Amino acid sequence: MATSLSTDAFAGWLRDFAAVIHRDAALLNGLDAKIGDADHGTNMDRGMAAVVKALDSTEFDTPDALLKKAGMTLVSTVGGASGPLYGTFFLRFASALQGHSDVGVAGLGQALRAGVEGIVSRGKADLQDKTMYDALAPALEAFDRAAGKGEDVGEALSAAATAAAKGRDDTVPLVARKGRASYLGERSIGHQDPGATSSTLLLESAATTLS
Ligand code: ADP
Ligand code: MG
Image 1 (cartoon, rainbow, N blue to C red):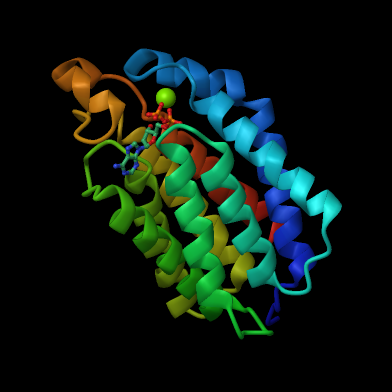
Image 2: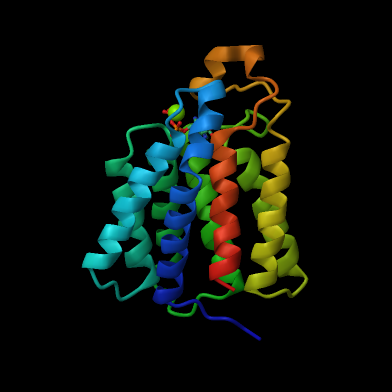
């Protein structure tokens, strides 16, 4: 069955992601403590709590208005590297949805791609730099592969989430080459990247809420 994603569906995604981030904030801080400054969970929790507050106080008529607000809120409330990166993801995601009243699997794939390209243009990460991009890039590929086979939004997102989790796990042996963790050089080996971990949560949340 063709799915058309509503503004409410995207709001549900953001609320669920906020709840998951709140639940796992200590875990994300713990991962960041190993290769950074122990604040990734706190940063994301602060940002997503502000997003939920914005959702509670404003009516959004379209998915792009809602997601643009989420992006702006993350940029303005999160001090760490992850704020501008996640903020840019949602801003570019929103722009890609603009003018599309009927968001299905193709539109969602384009929006995800635009969001991830925004992260790359902002943070200049390459594959295997041990960042969130190492979870997001394989997720995009898996989404497109599933969509190309005619799978629906739920199936494509579930494939994306599985690929993200593998990409996240594959960050463990890598040497960090971007962000704070890169200061550690070889000592970053053996630790899972916090941003790749939260990005996997974002896609797992999408798979449960947008299908
Ligand atoms: P900070 O490093 O400023 O304390 P956070 O701890 O909130 O910010 O976020 C760290 C995460 O941000 C890293 O685990 C990594 O995934 C991601 N990150 C850092 N720099 C980049 C970059 N240039 N491109 C993509 N992701 C990055
Ligand atoms: Mg940090």
